[in-house]
Image 1 (spheres, rainbow, N blue to C red):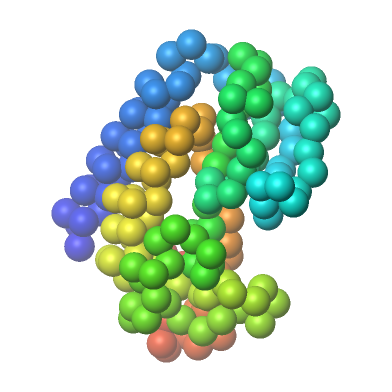
Image 2: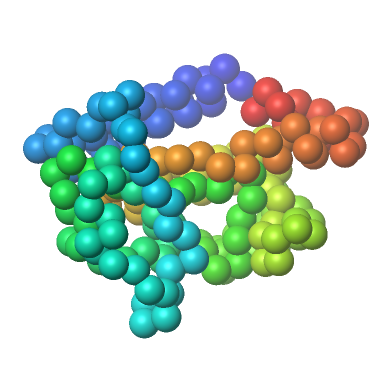
Length: 171
């Protein structure tokens, strides 16, 4: 168990360093200096309306890594581009969904979000998917960092069934 935690720490550290080197070599984004930011999810090319001019003056933008406008439109030296990552849920529209659909770690659907499924964050295969597939794809796309969402799923599951999901909070 301890060696997995060390391997996980080393892997995440390596990915973060790699991400920093990919785009931040020429960009110095101090997140403590972010005053104005926006989040743009549910982008559909040809359907979603956005104006690149509306993004000017923002310090940071958060995009869905599987559906976002062309980054070239948003490459302002002073804007940090952040990827939205759901850690406690997996969505049917994700590029990796077909690979994980039916896996033991994919649990019931979130009744509040159609097509979103809780995941058991304790499961090694889910953590491997995040670290070896989802994060490298984000780095390759040129994001400056990640925003982790649905971290509270572990608390929810452990509260819902303390015996079945024991240890979820610690995972």
